[in-house]
Image (tube, rainbow, N blue to C red):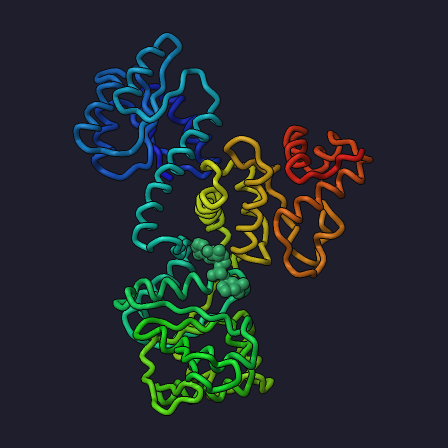
Length: 451
Ligand SMILES: Nc1ncnc2c1ncn2[C@@H]1O[C@H](COP(=O)(O)OP(=O)(O)OP(=O)(O)O)[C@@H](O)[C@H]1O
Ligand SMILES: [Mg+2]
């Protein structure tokens, strides 16, 4: 983020620059309105902090000229105590916000971050339009993610077979969809199938289809997923879970580029691009004889590797803001901002569960948070790792199948109430929420009545 500070007093410019620098915000100073306009014509800024009272042309006049010249960075007007009426007039004339001197620089930082957030949301809406409803673009601005995006651009244009690997929750499916979305055949179907989730006995008919009466229960003809994908893309997720018997069949399909439905006689050509993904070490599976080497070579024509989130932690704030927007909409909540404390806490955590874990952490934060800002205390880490002791409930950290968030929350509240002997204030303190929040939750979940 880059900010232009327009103030005729040098020590004010310098102290803001220094303060913003500590917050990782780049600032440049301009002594007069004329100098500010010159700087704005010369290079892009994300925001302008503009003193109303300047020698030469006034702050108000700078704002007017900016608007006339189509210089669009948002403006925060700074006014002295006696000029509040002027500041309000500036708001009407197009400034985004104002501050009255003397003010706490932390307040300026909050306002600046808010502006960036607004901008990002505007950009997202556009990206959302491009990606179509419900789809997530692959977000990331770190070196590794830019390189990955460049690779995707390279392969999107061809029909090359891609194998995506990476730890759980790193965005393998997002990447697969992105390849398809950027391809010239984006309007064709994208068919995703989770190999790990299909019963072995049904996998063949699922992938290749069957004719009526091909086996007991085959009441009608059913096209397979290869057929449904047409000229589009077939995404074989968790390919490492495919049983060896089916691996042979898949290999044959990839070699011959045609399928035959179970019980069928005619061949159907396979035109879809095949993208597979796994969070396993496929090379190790091959060495151990659990994955066929010849199939491995067929699938691994182009390899895309999603780095773990801890190797791109600089992307965490960006990802977090995007996920917050997505989650708030999904949960029917108003937009929330990410406070500095929360950002810091997230940025320094290792996220063994990667982006998915980040998403879960934010979802919990949205439930517990009061107001429209996620604060450091709303962020509860270390609840996903089975090895770490869960701070809230002895039940939640086990390797049990994933439970619903509501259930976890309810259990946490019950456990805290039990520990506090039914004292709601103390339970609230332990959970790091207000008494009001816990009372609402107790009511909503119908727990803790018999104290
Ligand atoms: N770069 C990203 N930008 C935006 N959202 C992302 C990104 N990476 C992951 N996500 C989000 O994180 C979640 C997990 O992503 P995804 O399902 O693609 O991961 P995965 O690698 O397939 O995980 P698994 O191995 O557990 O299936 C999704 O909700 C996805 O939208
Ligand atoms: Mg996945």
